[in-house]
Amino acid sequence: MPQNTSKPSLVRRTFLIGAGGLAAAAPGRSGERPRPERPGHPTAQPAPEDSYRPAYHFSVPDNWKNDPQRPVYIDGEYLYYYLYNDDYLAGGHGTSWRLATTKDHVSFIDRGVAIEKFSNPNGDCWSGCVVLDREGTAGYGPGALIALVTQAPQGTQGQYLWYSTDKGRSYSPGPDYPVLPNPGVHDFRDPKVIWDEERGRWFMANAEGKRLAFYTSPNLRDWSYVADFPREDLGVLECPDLFKMRAEDGTEHWVLGVSANGKSQGLPATYAYWTGRFDGISFTADNADPEWLDRGFDFYGAVTFEGHDAAGQPDPALRHAIGWANFWDYPHNAPSLVTDHYNGDDMIVRDLHLLKEGGRYVLTSQPAAALRQYTIQEHVLGDVVLSGTQDLAVHSRAYELSCTLTWDTAAPPGNIGFELCRAPGGGRHVAAGAYFDGGFSYVNRRPTFNPGAGGESQVAFDTAAGELEVRILVDHSSVEFFVGNGRVVHSHRAFPLAGDDGIRLFVSDGQAVYRNLTIRELAVP
Picture 1 (cartoon, rainbow, N blue to C red):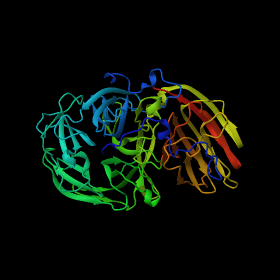
Picture 2: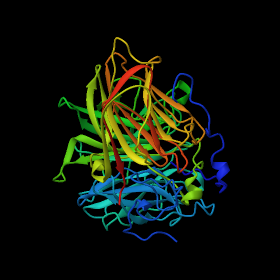
Picture 3: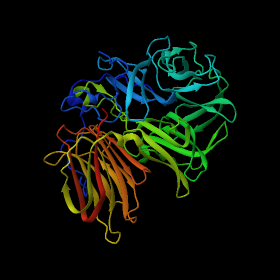
């Protein structure tokens, strides 16, 4: 999808318009360009005390990033491209494709720009995808990497072909004309291509307003329309996704995903998906209503990509996901522009598995398995029995907190949770927990500085279960709350002040136990 091209103001006050300052919680709750080969986490360098640069999440080295592009696995590493504007701070517009590489989904190496914006007559480069053309079907030789990229000369979106013969470090433009021309519609973008092994051809899902359109091709150049997947109730669809995955019970299923906006129905505006059947032409969903990979406010433009085992072989039961830590309601509302001279982070890369739950197959998410290898200090606090509040002695701005919340089902408490990013005197914080009176898990960012749209996400949970496993990632300007087996995740941007590094536990109207409470401070060197 394109970058919002409105010029950002560099006045900090502007970024925080509408943000929650010292507001109380809701009633009843506690509420020059970097050279290639440098680490993709500039936190390894000295930073201002009030830095919002994350310690262990991916962030752009400078200026601006938005959409992730689906990573591709080559020679033992994943090539991760993303939309990048190198003159954003100067008021420039348009995006190129910048490349970072990773072997473990946590530590990234910046490799510089792979596709320059405005470097051919078709304008800048929006979202698309890269595929490995093993047999050279596109005419650039076996093993070439082919990028199908949306460009919009004279404002007309179409899909253009670029190719790489240096293992993805740089790309050259293919034909000047679109390989998939616009038939005369306003929204026509974000092609996602897979190789259909069974039929020996390429298959594309393309976002076209309120439908996903499907096309097939023998060579990545000549495309034929075959079917579509309409959806009238989820806004303008963007960044489609299609893949096959093996569930934990051994069965195989197709999954169709898309960045969608369900806010008009009280639903998220993140990554929606359906499981179903794919016959090489059309996709038939198992259920009309989508599932959501994230129930927070900041997991947009997400992509999933193939997992591999230790030997580098594809693992059909493992997939990964990465999402942009932002949303178009407030794309420029980031104090990192002042403190760190950039705007663009991602949420943590996730490991995805597919399981059967209540008659439906659903995706579960957990932080990338390698994350705990980046622990710089571990605090094992054991079991904490609590009624009321307890402030922890641990203070940090970048950590993972994990525990299992347990309670007496015959006398459940009203609310169990955490005040994260807590100011020294209280007041400012982000609240996360389980609210029994309403029967939902939640993250409430209203009590601290935040982007200013959306305050609290809520998702139902089983209050009669007696326990709830939680993992929470906090990193300078984000909070991610993984609930249970990761079926539910709340991802949020928040902008606590530099000294807001406290953690408070609270149990309201009853008692609960925080079992095996552990905090791991994290950083990528």
